[in-house]
Image (cartoon, rainbow, N blue to C red; front, side, top):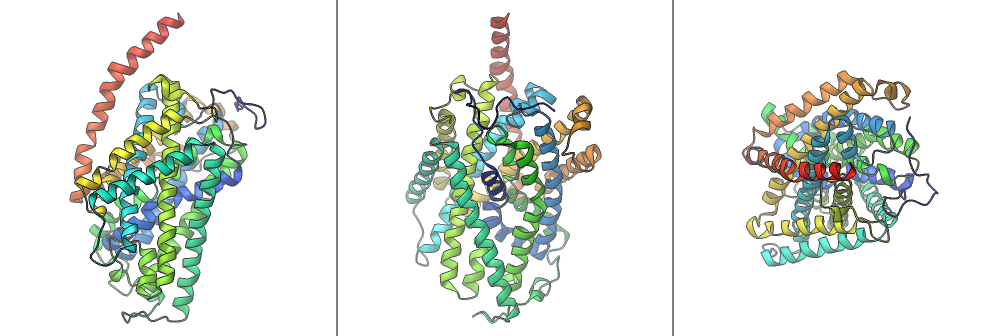
Length: 477
């Protein structure tokens, strides 16, 4: 197995990313990536579409993502010179795949940032009197302030980023564990809400069964549910900044099933036990509405602060990962060379400014789509389509890796269960999710316009990247 070019303690090149993220950081960031805006905000709409079958949806998606992450983990550990999956795709499929996955991952996280801004406005409306809402100008100013805060955090050291994300993730974990414990107590004490409903596990299946919206509702629930899993692959962008990756990456990946069961399935099972799913608003976080429904205003306020911190965490992670993608693209000549420059703190500052500028421009959505749930759905739908293509390329990379590097697979201590045939099953599942996106009018719009991105990348690859590579080749000769 190829070893890393840097040891943990040796001084790194000033032109390279440095291994400053510890196991503690990586584990919590991996958990934080699995608990994002899609769970806290998107699950309200998913429950309205699918009812209690959302629990089955999360288990299916979670199982597929476990295999996807095992495939990604095996490839990254087979060659520690891979800084992220840009290098992986470039090496195993070709420069075109690296170009596509890098820029698509960048745009995907820009869309996550825009969706997060819509979610922040939605959560802040909780503090306003009934019938009062932020003006479009107010929404834009709040969005700009959030982006500047995240930019400031990321311009400092990567270790500080890891520390802040550690605490963001810890807040989310403790909040969900608290919700599970409080909700469980309410169920066992037969708590009666002001609306008259009594907390009981039977609430989950007593309002039309597990599939109250039928097969159509079950399928429709996959779209927003998939958005909840965006970020699970985040540790794949941190390979170049993780201490002792051979030990720490497997730990983070293997814990994914436990996290899905605890933070998605069990948490939402408790939510729907306390609050019948028919009474959960589609445009609110069910984690906040649970306490509002129960008449516990103080706990609802605390949970609202938690989901706000979760959104900021999501945006923070997104800005971090996009800047690293831009750094990798620029190092390969697939993005402007300036984006490969590091600051004195070994941070890709120009990439951070570039990404934050585009997220800031996304704040303009608050003018054109003042309905925050509509804006969230539009941005998240486009984002999911991009990430489906990225996840698919990761699986194709694994199939190519098995064909081209059989000796590395034989030596691997972290082999993907099921191997190549499981890779094809995950690819079929991802293709199935694209078909599902065509069933809903709002996601169908996103699906129809998404090929424009592929066309833009194809044109820029042919007329910008290829000539640059030819020029580089002539200079080397």
